[in-house]
Amino acid sequence: MADEEKKEEEKKKGFFGEFKEFISRGNVVDMAVGVVIGGAFTAIVNSLVNDIIMPLIGAITGGVDFNSLCVKVGEASINYGTFIQNIVYFVLVAFVIFLVVKGINKMRRKEEKKAE
Image (cartoon, rainbow, N blue to C red; front, side):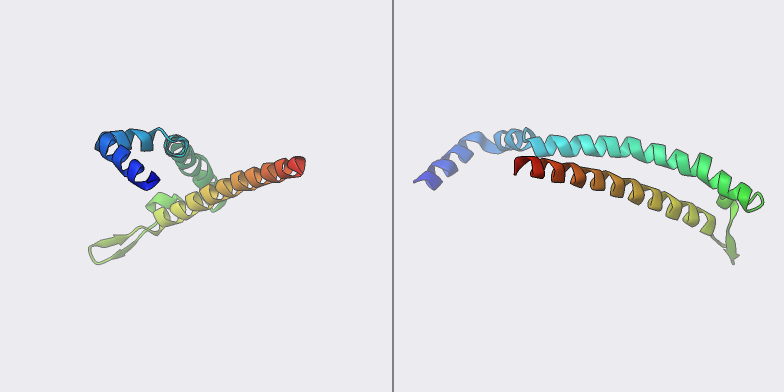
């Protein structure tokens, strides 16, 4: 009987009622906040890589501008310098995410010990 009552309630709620219930759950809101913060973080990491790290690496390697590194194959241009910058970007983002997850896991372990 409980299943039949749930089905009746869902029919009464309709599409928008179900959507309102879905969107008001805590996990969805947390995920939305994470996406917004991730977008802002992306801009910061892009600037860090493009404006600070790569120019420093360029200065160390004798003034090499990684944006201009490419190989011409006929009419095509293979921009491997941009690829190198994207690898540096990826490594930085992965490292920061690793540190965040490591910190969260450490806090959870402390809370589990307190609970025991």
